[in-house]
Length: 175
Image: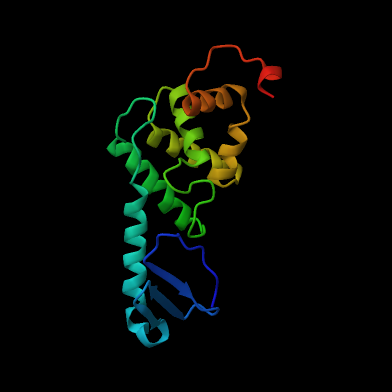
């Protein structure tokens, strides 16, 4: 069976076999149950639908802002769900690299910075970016990564991520 990372306090662990057709569920101090997906092929479509729904809903789960203590806005949640939908529609893998857990994807920071610089909302900016990326023959991610090299954008991203740090820092003291 394939190895998996198991939490030390896990009661139930799940391990797929090498060809990903059998799932072994081990319940601590109770035993193992093997689920054979080949025998449940009629349920695969429903299982996939359930998985996508859960994944997209989970994307909206966000921690409160550490600076303000405020909960995420409905727009914040919408933006995160939309980013994942676009990721999947674009052929992306199940996991969005750089966007695990409750962390914001780098491209979302860049979009937020652009919206702030241009005094517009993130969704409007997303539309403009999609149009510009398409015109240049680039993916949205690649386009945003190029835009992020502009000094004003890079500075705004840093301000959004880390707050407005105006105090001078002596690097020799830090390093």
